Image (cartoon, rainbow, N blue to C red; front, side):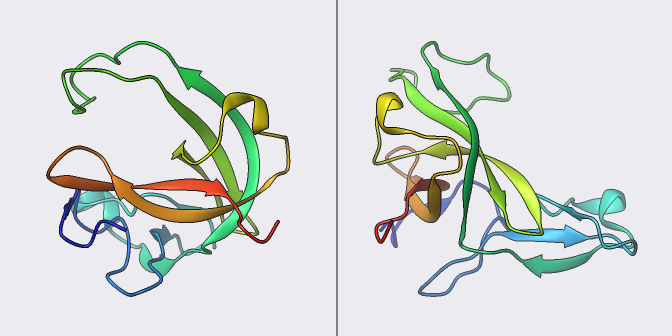
Length: 132
């Protein structure tokens, strides 16, 4: 866990022992993630999202993404990137940790993790559920 690292952006997850991502719910019930800011947040209510979901799709990022928006370390290391469906809520684009590309399977149970992004910031990610 990365308790001493600053979150990569404010308002992405709750600050509790078992953090949860924070989305926004529209009046029609649709949920978006992340919770928009400013005028885009008008009419949305913050909602905490499930800590678990299922793997919907994935790939491996083998080259440094264009900056901006990427703000990662200059020395790039490939990472896994995927979409995790939170049941009845939303599909979240996320880093995937604690797995190899070959270990991932469609519909695999996943759980939220807060992990280091660089030497001073943390980010959210999902990893295969430990009890699965």
